[in-house]
Length: 143
Image 1 (spheres, rainbow, N blue to C red):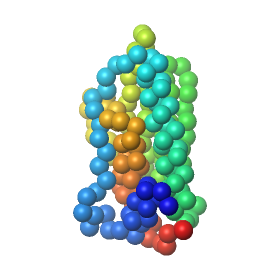
Image 2 (image 1 turned 90 degrees about the horizontal axis):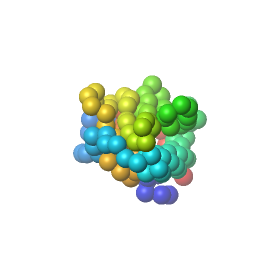
Image 3 (image 1 turned 180 degrees about the vertical axis):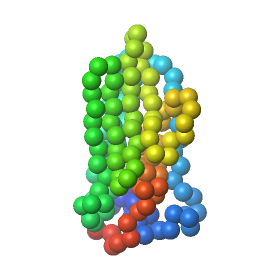
Image 4 (image 1 turned 180 degrees about the horizontal axis):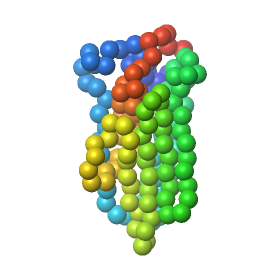
């Protein structure tokens, strides 16, 4: 098992209120970057999200409990959303006037000025938080 698979396995069946440290992901205010830097960052976050989603789904026994990822592309934006049960988070990168801006929106993401993940590695914490907020299943772990 990978470290993220082990983390998901530990969360399954746990009482969210009893978690010593609920999953917390880091964000920062969205700041403009060069288009190529913004696109590269978006692709890195998206690729890691897909990998971690697959790892989590390998641990979640029931197909109905699997995370899903949906890509969106068009116009001046790259985006993808991760869905779990009745919740979702969306990560997007908008391109305008030679500048790229990242933005995180969705369930559990505070309203306010646009924010983006602090780093690509924060996607693991974001996915873990999504699982906990939507209510983890209470069943055996697939090994």
